[in-house]
Image (tube, rainbow, N blue to C red; front, side, top):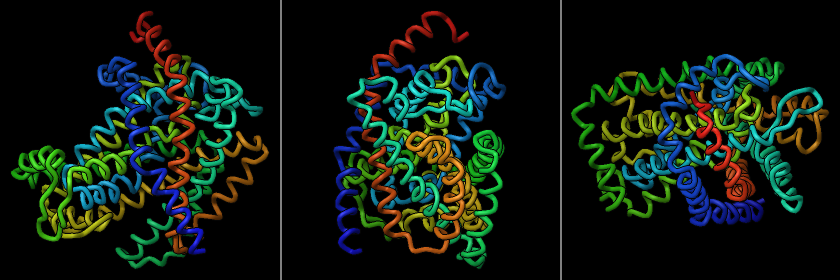
Length: 447
């Protein structure tokens, strides 16, 4: 087992190494330039379309608003709390700047993913709309590329059981046990029952729950974060100065913080940013393919908001709370660093982080269940959906009680491998995305 773990670890070091980070950022930058900064210039339009998208209009299964909430349910997770803290612990405050850069070019990636997902989606034998990287590879590229779609579906289905299921259940069980002394088996059982109740209804029930849960948990977390920042208002200017200066000069050792070079800020900022918003991994377009819309571009404009909300808003709140509170110099890491940052300003702040982490992880399990289901359907047909859901539910309590070091490593590796077929497809299909975008705005359909 140790040999297998070392082998996977070596693969992980390659797939999450510098070439992959450059590939993801490079693809995003290529798409942003090709789109002539459209995702940044049309941000306001995106929010307007999101508001209008609360009601269904066009072909599809769920309103555009619910499609984004389903995507955010899977995206907003431990990365927004533990991931940001880890980036700052390893790369210093400057890592937050590089997370922002990752998000800005990631908006172009997420936009393009959704445009392709809607443009190349199919209707399965149940009459449901299905799409995502495996479908836009299959329907948009030559037959010689078809194996990439199959590879993506395999990586996505397997990664889901780790990064989107057992790891999340384990995180919830761990924090609930440490904060409230709730037995891990009980947390696993409760999660299993709650997830099962939602999964029975398929994408419509998942999106319905996500459309209510995600706004509440996101707004609540951001609101508490803003309260902390108001209390620490005097430290905010210095925090921004530290973020920008250390992004290019590195961070000197301070307190329990060991110091970090510029390269560490870039590496960990980019890596944790991608882990948090998933731009380029190809997961989000699976949800957006189900949206009720006749315009791929409209859904793309809605989809890109996911990266903005996840990283520019939520991750920024976490990062600023950690920096302004001074907790980043204590030597703490991960979720415990975020807990310390909140608790030093607000009494009981650690419990707020525990509850937020639990809700974020629960929503991730729901969102990723849909991603995994679509990947399994692509590989084996609709007959595999019910067995997949049963297995998904069974894994939750097992994950809550298990030691998951190897599972986390394997899932993280598979997660990166998902990006490879997706990035290749996005580059090859970029001319289609550019043309659809030009035609949409030339015809004045954004009015």
